[in-house]
Image (cartoon, rainbow, N blue to C red; front, side, top):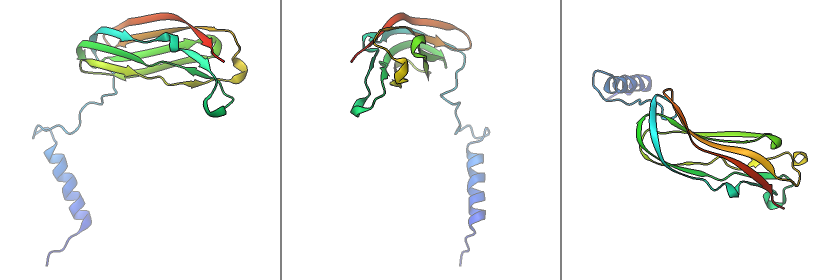
Length: 158
């Protein structure tokens, strides 16, 4: 009859995993976090961002809260070295909006930056339009390069 002791089995499993993934075997189970910015650079081939869709509209489904509708950006990069990050920054001071979306990347490709819509204080929104800025930046510990910058007008749509 074979006796099974759960704590001993668990301890042996943990020990075997540590040995199998340790530096002596050469198998890496733990890679650097993909969300950690590092050194590196990248060339930007294109930025697609339709700022005409940046506007304030009424909330959906009958809510009495206005929303700032923020369009997604699509950034195509190549010649990537290291782990730089993309930053999508939006600022509309008179609406008290300042938002940043970041995406760390390490390979060539197209990356989507999706800030999402922002609920606004109904008493802060009038009928006039608002001025803001949109900026997309490639950033690392080595360098910071603004690849897209635009002054925008945010319309209030009723």
